[in-house]
Length: 292
Image 1: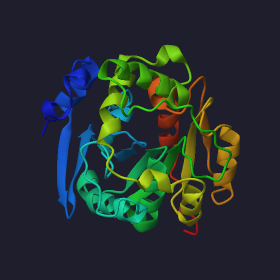
Image 2: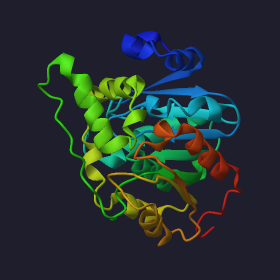
Image 3: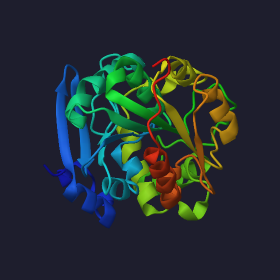
Image 4: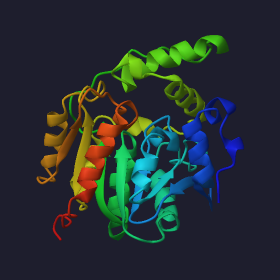
C-alpha cells in the first residue's frame, strides 16, 4: 500500500525525495483504543525500526531510508502523539505511549526480532520497548539522546506561536540552527518544511518526561545490547564521550560512532557519514543480552 500524498502538505510533496518515498512506501494504519498509529516501511530483510525525535515524524529519517532499505526492511512509525499517530489518553505517561507502540510492533515487523535505531526522544521509547518486549528487540542504537544525566545546554529558541505566517520560515530556520543543525549551510528548504510541518502536529507532553535521567534509568534496566551514534557538535547534549560513558556504566561493551561536523540531527545534516556509521554497527554480530 502506498502513502496517500494528501497526508503531507504541498510544501513537502514538492521535494523529489519525499515524493519518491511516499510513492514506494508500505503504509500501515493500526487502530488502538485512543485512535490510531501510523507507520511506513520500505525494503526487505531484517526489520530495522527507526524512532524519530520530539516534534518529529517519519521524515526525520528522510535522507536515510533509501540507503538502509537496500539491505533491510526499514520501518518508521510516527510515535504516539506525533505526526499522524494519536496519543494515549494519558499525555504524560511514557509507559502509556510505549504500550501503543508495543501493541503495533508485531504488525510492523512481521513478528520478527528487530534492530531499533532511536533518535533523541525516541531513545526513551526504544529502551522502554526493549524492557517490555525483550524477545522482540535484538539491539538498540541510540542517537543523540538526552536523559542520560549528563551536561545539557538549552537552545536559544524563538517562539513560533503568534508569529505571522510570512515570518515563520525565518523563525524555523533560526530554531534549527539553535539546536538541530550545526552548519548553517545545511539548513535547507526541506529541513525547514519538515520542521514547520511536524511542530504543530505534536499532541502530547511525553517529551517533558525525559530530562534529566529517565533514559539512563531505562538503560539500566535494558538487557538488549546498546550502541550509540553521536553528532560531534550536538548542541543540547555535548561531548559524545561523556554520554557513552554514562551508558557504559550499565552496558560496558557499548560502542560509539561519532559523526564529524554534525549537530543534534546528524542523520539529516551528514547523511552519508551517518549511514556509514549505522550500517557498520548493524553489520557487527549481535551481542548477547546482559545476563543472557
